[in-house]
Length: 198
Image (cartoon, one colour):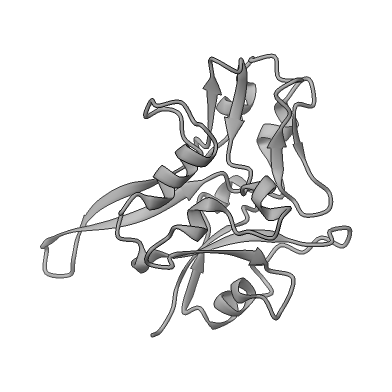
């Protein structure tokens, strides 16, 4: 785990999402909870989290389908923060959460173009870019993100991976495989996809 987990000396926490891939059944509870809790516009292009369907074939050539939950990866090297001309996109030093200040956003959408995960959308009503915040207001009162709280298969898990006693650190330690999306981009994402032996 040590070679994949991001450590930052100045961080109090390293908050991350750990997703157990084969537990996702595409029930969309995460999507509905997120849309409802955060009043996301009712258009498919506007989302903070969703689930992709991936079609492939098994070893015998039979069609299979798997599901991949996706959201903002709250990257260590966040290109959305780097390109933002006003500082509206920023990364919290204490825990690594990447946020957008809607009062500073000028709607240039440079961050949307820079994000390799397509994890941002423009909210016409708010005249600002929006994205996943790891449900920061919920975290501040001791709750898990809404998508984690409603995940019926316990596919989504959340916590501080720098705390060896946290559930997410234990999941990473015991995982049979660990991956992150588009690691070749050098973003050092804080969303991990794992498999485990059960």
